[in-house]
Length: 129
Length: 139
Image (cartoon, one colour):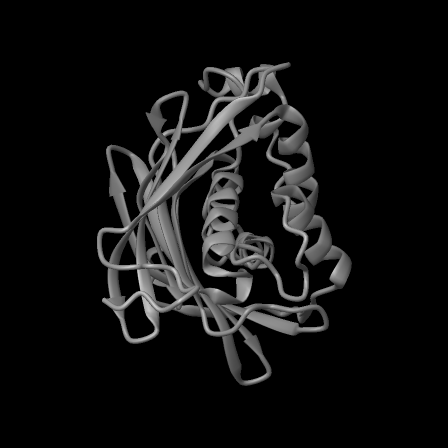
């Protein structure tokens, strides 16, 4: 079970992730996108979900990542991600509830380039009973 | 609304052309490698069934990424997308050796300033797979 004391808290990711052109190209290629000057709108998920997993499955929050399904997803894109961006991710546990034994947690992920907020994401994650 | 020469006629209620994407196991492997999401429910039939799924299912985020491609093509590029959201209501089931459809369409819901809101429909094998799917794009 998720540690209830973590709800409402923001956790700053320890890493800085530098986006490469080849990462954008391989993501775009799956979608048949040939214009790769900027990343496709959902590209940031590959950063935020990884960062959220590191924080949420750690002992401080203790979410069981192995039985997780993705409930919903939202992006607010201030500007598109491009190659060379060095991004940090902060994750905020915005809400948490248990319904029929399933744990339902909504996590906001904010990707920053220095002090500039580039993309905000919201992921609702469900740990099945 | 004035339809300027060469401009698209867009107003609330305008229906965008439907488009069909094909999803197969190969695409799931490509998306897993590109996104880093190597959950075996998207590649291994035996594992998927062991956790109660009917078969291998597509990543919800692959479905959403393809819908994103639909939106960006219409809006004129990835940089035009300002907001994008959806709920994963049913999985896209991908049997071995088959190509399944992801059928996408959208309607203009609102125009405010330089921003157009779209409500989006996405189905596979006739089943609605995304709920509350919306995007906001720049004109």
